[in-house]
Length: 317
Length: 268
Image (cartoon, rainbow over all chains, first blue to last red; front, side, top):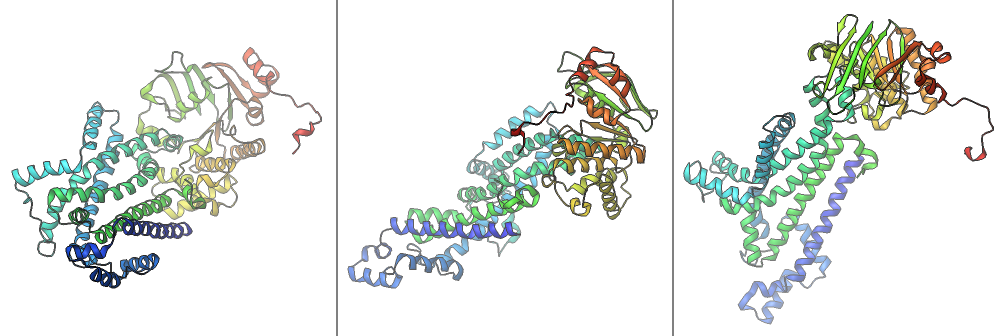
């Protein structure tokens, strides 16, 4: 429990540092938001009035404080280009990207773990070379490319979904998830291949450990050895990898959203970068950073639940 | 009770046979010592008895019978019924021989779980505690929930012994069980094995490269060199009157205890 408390504290500290750096970086590169917002209508008087209104004359740290509190109160400033509150802008898009990321992560879990076990058990079969080659191929498939293929095959050829038209959750919840499934598959495929390969190699590694011989000497069959002993040991390093995967899946989702016309964070992020709409960009940066740190924290906590050796003093790395 | 006849084992990856024509008998309630240097085939002999030979990567012939049941050529299903239940094994390195992510107590009770699934988990818990007490593990209730990395080598070896005797096997195979331990712990483990042999009549095959250790524990000893059994007999006879030159060299290699004043730098 002490370990968990320390991890959560570390998460908070990391987030404070990351958000401050993001805030600092964007206040340095963005120039004067007031001028940017007024554009061609900018006169010195109008700029000065808007600066006062936006609180830009206050010390940087005070501005940062107000901004960070905005993550809890919902007041994150106004977008330059959309002229609407950043929080409502992101609030519409974020759930879509999160749903897509979680769906592809779920796919990775339910497909990769059984496949990895199977692949390890069949490592001596004649088809093993073919499987390895296939695995390499899937690993090399970039999500946007798979996305285009899937759109062509299932969208245009088979009409399983309508490309370019993404259903709204509140209107067609079933259709929403059905349409989300295709981009999720595109994101998941290379990660599934990587996880299968890693799990296979950790299982084969663990199979050569002395404790396996002990387990056999007690009368375990292959299944008993695998599920009672080897799998837990083999999963321990894979969990850290899955945490990374969960962190990276969101980046994959943002790219693939473009291919499938999913109105998620991806489009908003790209548009905002193009428009130099920094208030939007910096909030998205902090949200993505939070997702990555959160994924790793969960991974660490799970690893230490599985492997008691990591509980020693809280940091065995 | 255990009868090994003309055992040959040859690994595909090696030129020479690991075991060539070994015949050995262990009588009921006896502790037989099997001595030899590393690579002499003593461990391979024991692994053949335990059903732990990698069958696909070696050729083997001969027979191994435990109370009339053939083990060497037995199919996997029969072998699994014997493993753990009739034959317990204790390995050299207790730390690596234990599953690092499983509680000590669960590992001790595993044989019961496998061979007596009808025993409730609560009863299994008490059986494990009893076995740990028998192996003289201090504080078994506390040790039950610990993980291997939290215990010393001697404690782990006691836990391994507890796991090996929990289902009252007829035969205990001990593959250099004290080699990885320091001398004091080694002596304690030997005493424990003697006690288990005396109180429960468990027959044992004790493998060691150290004749001196074997002499303290075993009534009979067999000596192996390069896969061949070179000498066999009552331990004291072999000790006093070795026939084979290899046995003579083994005995000569044991440092004798001459009383000398220990040099100062040895005292801490």
